Amino acid sequence: MGSWSAPSGGKTAESAKDGTWNPKTNVTAGDLDGDAVPDLADPTRDGNLVLVRGNADPAAPPTTMSTKAQSPDGTGWDNYLVAHRGTATGSNVDDLFAFNKTTHELYLYANDAVTPGGRAGRFTLTQNVVPIRTSDSCPAKGSDGTWNNVTQILAPGELAQFADVPDLITVDNGELWYYP
Image (cartoon, rainbow, N blue to C red):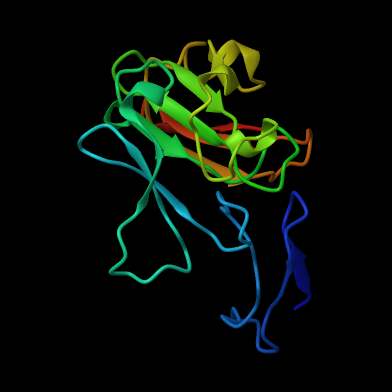
């Protein structure tokens, strides 16, 4: 087995000689705050979006990345499915895909790190929100050209390497759809 190089300038991971994964390898996937460690974004019941740091003490409380009012439409992050893995803005930290489960709107929310004076791991600058109005704007176009039938989203990074933006996978009308 050879090595795998993560898209978007990620670090290289070597597989073990017998072909199994070597857990001692250093891979950065899903870094939201710029510390080169994968993180999780988690919508809370009160509508905030919190950062669960990959290297934090499990007993430590998460950090608020974005308040309810700073969600793409101001209704709260508890109305959203979120996914991250890669950047659409060319930074060294992940941006977010945010899908409103009620209105069926999909957004790309750039990490605050891309704005002068912005902090990595924060999503507070609503001017960084870009709506992705229909799936017609994506090559696969979804089941009906809208996001109305989406029930799950996943941002796997740049699998196809067609463009320098993260790919998106959705479950749409019970089927997997891939948007390179």
